[in-house]
Image 1 (cartoon, protein in one colour):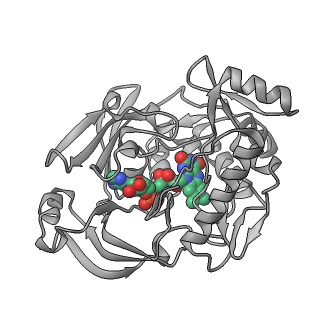
Image 2 (cartoon, rainbow, N blue to C red):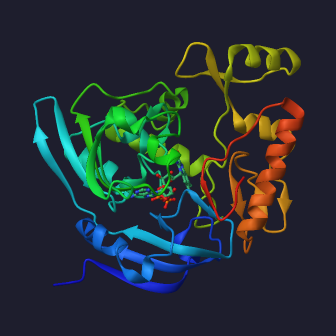
Image 3 (spheres, protein in one colour):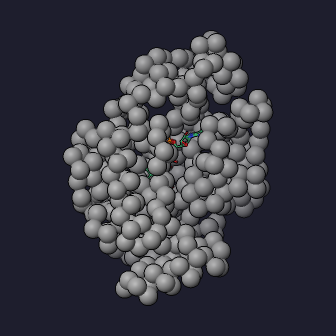
Length: 347
Ligand SMILES: Cc1cc2nc3c(=O)[nH]c(=O)nc-3n(C[C@H](O)[C@H](O)[C@H](O)COP(=O)(O)OP(=O)(O)OC[C@H]3O[C@@H](n4cnc5c(N)ncnc54)[C@H](O)[C@@H]3O)c2cc1C
């Protein structure tokens, strides 16, 4: 029988993070069977190595040349429908399943909901970590449960949605990194009526595509088309998508900002007394769009994306991110918070 996991030492990470940062990891554990996690974590050779789960590396910035711990990469990747209750179906997906492949897998089975989240890179197991979201939809809306191995409790657990404490690009998993290793997710997906066109650009894109009707498949196609046009491709310029979260502020703060600066875009937030600002707008107004520091740059295509135009190191990218945030803070008095996980440094 094939081993449930394998260990490798002094591992290059260049091909394992979408920023294409040339760092190394002391150890990498590749896990083929999540039930073996307790044995893996009990390995004598790993006892003094802090573990960190690494999926596809599309939301991390290695800000150090060397990660001194053990990266855990889950490769279990099956998906199945566990129950079908008429208008909904419950889907169980292993953590290692590729997210964008899952979107098509569900559409192929007549299930809806994930189409707005098409083309987000990464593994399914990472989706609940920052509650991935795009084009008016967050994955939390469809998460029925998250299966984890809780290192603190030394036990496998099934966390229902309430226990995941999902928020805007946030969850209990993000707030307590490395405590719980997500081994699988359960999604409850409707068969009809879930198409979400709240993001205005989607309707416009469908119209531009020849007046396509908003079927889930067409919405996925429109989302993919918009994303390819708007976002820099990590295969061409390394990046981790949006580098900063959109700041959530009180309505009073937003009003004060609008009184000082013309045209500040303000969006609804999850609570009535708060609203969301556009981090991209703030960065652009502070003059950072397209600014380059060596091979580290603020994308000229999208001000919210930091790009590695060649051989930028993690520390160089982090320095640029800090300069951008400091300048937005100085000009607008708004603190920007990074979205990706920064490994080996604090922001
Ligand atoms: C071009 C581009 C576009 C993007 N667009 C979006 C977008 O529209 N919306 C959005 O929300 N995100 C977006 N992202 C960010 C990213 O794709 C998502 O956050 C994705 O879910 C990360 O998956 P991953 O497997 O690459 O995780 P990684 O980057 O490997 O890990 C991210 C974090 O999750 C943790 N983690 C990963 N897997 C597990 C697990 N199984 N158990 C416990 N912890 C785990 C890691 O330790 C780390 O803290 C984009 C990124 C890129 C490069």
